[in-house]
Amino acid sequence: MANEIKKAVKDVGDAVKEGVHRGNADAERETRDEFGDVMTPGEKAGSIGREVSEKGKAEFDRMKRKTRDAT
Image 1 (cartoon, rainbow, N blue to C red):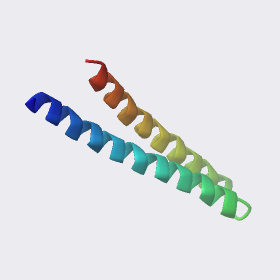
Image 2 (tube, rainbow, N blue to C red):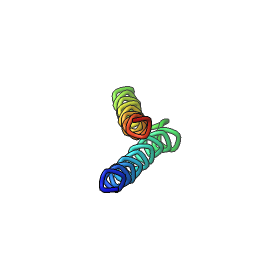
Image 3 (cartoon, rainbow, N blue to C red):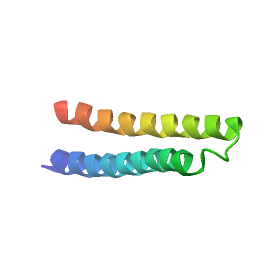
Image 4 (cartoon, rainbow, N blue to C red):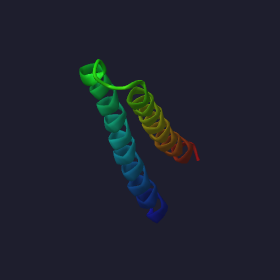
């Protein structure tokens, strides 16, 4: 029973983190959509890098949940 509670707490934490990371990735995309015309190529590249990084972090949190649930 205690293990199930710990698993649930970790799952919720990872789900929240995943949501935050996906939100940050979406915000980077929206920033480029809105201000892309006035952004320098370096700013755009940085924004794309941050978006990719946030998506990767979100996927990592998702995979932690799926792995934990599979065991």
